[in-house]
Length: 317
Image (cartoon, rainbow, N blue to C red; front, side, top):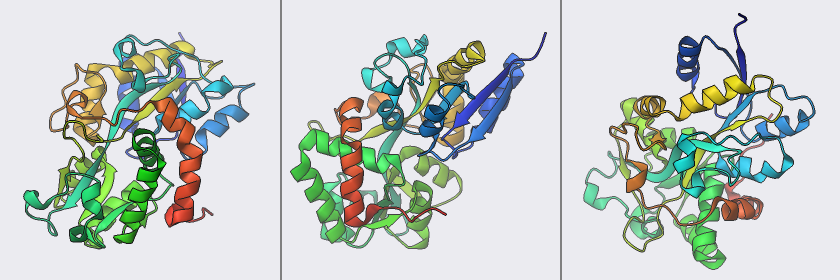
């Protein structure tokens, strides 16, 4: 019997999921081929190949990016068993994309600058105060999580509040870096006090031996909550190895794989049966209560406004 081959397009390039692919190969005798594609280009690649799909599965790092192209009919809905119990924001309405780990936004704290946890921020508004002047940082619009976080604030509290907050942060000396990775590395190098990143960035950076802590913002009852994006997986419509694609999605969403992702990369499981370890369970995070559809609707205008404010990333070669 010929060995099945699963071809994956990955817009998620960090952390590298190679251990997960190798494990799936070992358990199923399926050969996995992965092509890494820049995360802002991967959906366009699938659209261009719509008449002759070359991939079976898409993996990428943004719900909003895949929701924005869902109407182009490039995905095959798949009602994976685990996803049937998902909250609505963790999947497409028609199950054409499914979240596989969550990206809560937190404040990563430089413990050399702020050694006392009592001095750590408790809200985004805290970062606009004088005690954090010139010591706060976040990624440019090169990261979808930056765009999505501001879009969620716009949806929750209106444009006047959201853009006013951005203006206050900029006036307070907000520093921007080209990626979440660059933002976390600069936290120590540039002696920033706080970096707005995804929670998994904190876990990875801590495990590398960096003196960092994690502050959860706006978690009080009635507060704004934290924006939560997610890594997503989708079956490509017309996939040549659709059976292997579905099997891989089931494997990715399983409790064992979710537990492994939490252990390796500090990623927040979406399967409630997974063991989270030191990662805060999704059920214990107060999420900003807005729909993925609304965040997607605001995506382009948020990106454009942030670019005018200096959040545009450096030009790529």
